[in-house]
Length: 310
Ligand SMILES: NC(=O)c1ccc[n+]([C@@H]2O[C@H](COP(=O)([O-])OP(=O)(O)OC[C@H]3O[C@@H](n4cnc5c(N)ncnc54)[C@H](O)[C@@H]3O)[C@@H](O)[C@H]2O)c1
Image (spheres, rainbow, N blue to C red):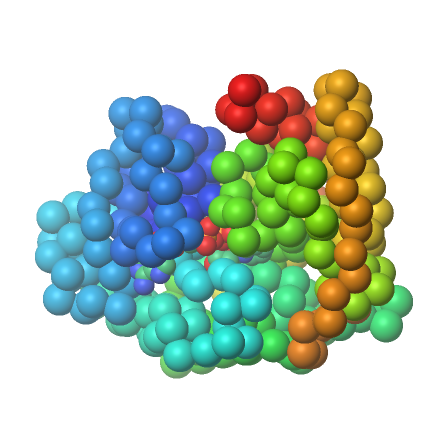
C-alpha cells in the first residue's frame, strides 16, 4: 500500500482516480475552484481531504511533514481552453508555477526517492495534419492552456535532467464520463438537449477529437504508476475519433434511445480563435487496452443524466 497525494482530486478525472485506487491510502489536496465538486469523492473512506493550493509552498511543506508520501499524481490545473483565451494568468499560475512549487517540495522531502506523475494532454502536440503523434514528436501548443501544460512538461524534463527528479508524464486525449463540469462539450450538450435549447458548435463543427472514457483513463494511469519507468512519457489515446458535430448527433441519438426526442437545433457559432482542427496520437508504448466502447459509455452517461434530472 502506497501513500499517494492526489492534487486536484475533487476535479473530474482526479476524482475517478481516487475511486480507482481504493487499496491505497490517499490524500487529496484541492483548491476547490469552480471546477471542483467534493460530492464526487465524499464516500471514499480510503481518502483524506485537505483544502489547499499547489502554489502554496508552506502549506505543501506541512502536508509532506504530516504524511510521508511515496507518490504524487498531479491533476490540479486550470483545464478549460476557452477560459485560457479570455485570461491566461491563472493558467500560468497553477499549471506552470504550481508544478514548479510541487516539484521543489517533493525534492526537498524525497531525497530522490518517490514518484511524481504529471497528468498532461495531447493538446501539447498541437494540431495534426493527419499523422499520428508519438511521445517523441516535438511540442507545438497552439492555445494558452496547451502552452501552459507544455511549459510544465519542459520544466519537468529540466528537473529530470538537472536533479534526476523521479517523474513520469502522461498525455491523454479528450476525456468523457459522468459528472464532468458543464463548461465542457458533452455535459453542455446533455443540458442543452434536455432543455430543448440550441446546441452551439464552434465553426463548422468538424474539429476532430479522440474520446477516452475517464474510467479507461484512470486505469491507464494506474498502469503507468505500477509499470511505468521514471523519466518516460506515455500517451493515453481515446478509442473513438469523432468530429464535434458527430459527437453531438450521437448524443441526440442516445437520448432518443431513452425515449427523449430533442426538439431544438444545432447552431454553428463563430469559431474560437486558434481552434485546433484535430489531435491524433498513438499509445502503443503504454499498451493499455481500452475497455469501454464509446456508444456504451455515452448511453450510460445519458441514462445517469436522465435519472438525475427526473
Ligand atoms: N478533461 C480532459 O479531457 C483532459 C484531457 C487531457 C488532460 N487533462 C488534464 O487532466 C487534469 C485533470 O483534468 P480535469 O478535467 O479533471 O480538470 P478539472 O478542471 O475538472 O479539475 C481540476 C481540479 O484541480 C483543482 N485545482 C485547480 N487549481 C488548483 C490549485 N492551484 N491547487 C490545487 N488544486 C487546484 C480544481 O479545484 C479542480 O478540482 C488536468 O491537469 C488537465 O490538464 C484533462
